Amino acid sequence: CQLVSLRNNLAVMSLPRLRKQLEELKRQLEALNDRHLKATLTSPDARLQRNVKLYQSHVVELKSSIGLIEAELHRRSCSSVGGADPLHCQLCQVRLQTAEGMAAHLIGKRHRKNQQKQQEQVLRDAAAAAE
Image 1 (cartoon, rainbow, N blue to C red):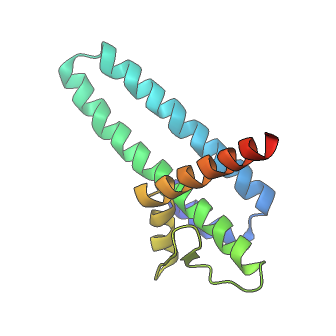
Image 2 (spheres, rainbow, N blue to C red; image 1 turned 180 degrees about the horizontal axis):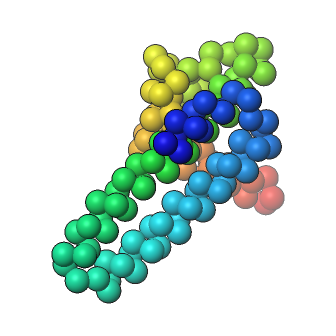
């Protein structure tokens, strides 16, 4: 239900509000992961199984929300730069068919791996420039 509300409000949210919401969702996901880790270390087996299912559903909802916001931010940044295709990921050189596909791509392994490579390259370039 939170995901449906977010999806309905994405188009009217300002960029700073979208970024703030994204950071809040990432903090919630990190806190949820921390709580889950502590629970797995201290819970009896039956209770742990219930907690795992609840944890997994929360993680899916948070990741979906994060993906939707990242896709909207990507769409807006592309549309403000000369009308570029909002369903094209420049970093990975892929074009997606739907906004949901873009959202899934942005939280996927391939995109995160390419982001990491890009960040490492920026750091290497900065270190080389400093020398």
